[in-house]
Image 1 (tube, rainbow, N blue to C red):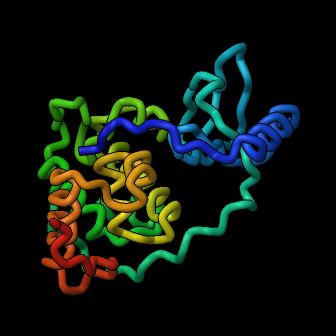
Image 2 (image 1 turned 60 degrees about the horizontal axis):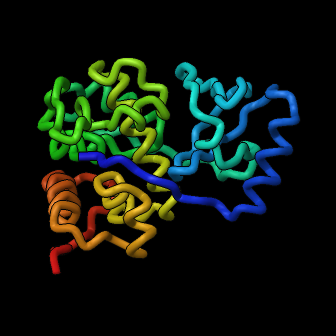
Length: 231
């Protein structure tokens, strides 16, 4: 399940300089909003409303406390996503079309998305965990809002939001699948705290189960190379 995440702070001086400069500029082009929990959201425009910020995203808009916004950075700071993997045979799983579309949009192996869904919710679109993770990819309500997922129980929206978050984590950790999965389960702040996979049995088991699912598909293009992660 995807746990609530806390701040991944950027260097204070750089964050404040970029943040103040961009707030003073007109919101006429695409930028990235960097949140204090480590998320980067692709925004088409933004507006400060008192102590709140409205961020317009390609899939909708979200209003957050201004204090939760660490910086606004130009789009050209970030490298483009890697090319999408070549199309393969359609997956024989529920929501295969939605998974395929999200994989193309966010340059992910569809088998990775399917493996995460299998472990997170066993393809139950109405799944609710004891910690209030929701839907197929078990998004926390705050995460869903940050990803502009309006209906967390809608399969297409939930899968697209979870895939977007996986893409962000893979980019943040240099395409290291194990660290990305650790952050998806335990939160990026825990990965930063322990400088690697947090020493939680739940997280070790989670990574092992997802990578085992990937290895069940011999044609998978994902880097599912882990052996046992348990100490």
